[in-house]
Length: 227
Image (tube, rainbow, N blue to C red; front, side):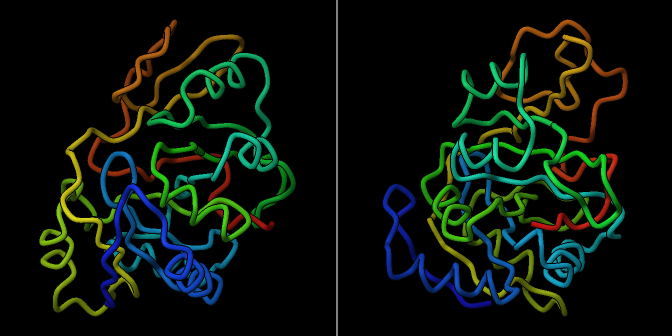
């Protein structure tokens, strides 16, 4: 795993170009978000997605959440309308993930959904914009372990493991924040799938919340999205 020191508040164009080129070639990158460190890969690259699951030490049975570079690029990838669009306009960029129908087709056929957000992290947005479509945003920790906020935790987590990320964008110690709130809109109601820092006006909570130690969630489509 190659480490590149970065300023989390300012994007270096030269570093960004190199990392985006690596993502396009199938690399998996540890990068800072507005919550914790995440694992970025090209969701349209099936091999890269499989590597993310291998690095986390979990079975590839769930679709990974995604990060978009802007509200406009998110709206080009998923269908946002009505209440979901209002949520996006109010809380993006920020730690709110919205589950919405994917535009186009996924590898498992039509009718898929994606969990997507636009973060308040310049590097996360820049990577997605550089790639030209959303990147994966699952937390950069082994399955079942807590989210990681410090560079030493990243190194310890993957040291000596067979499957490791290719690049670590080291932004130093991040301010610890809980994982993003995950919601979906159904029949005009906001349904919470995982509680988090954003608390929109919720009319009906999910009876069994998603585990807070991981951002992979069960969606209708488990395939890789064809872009």
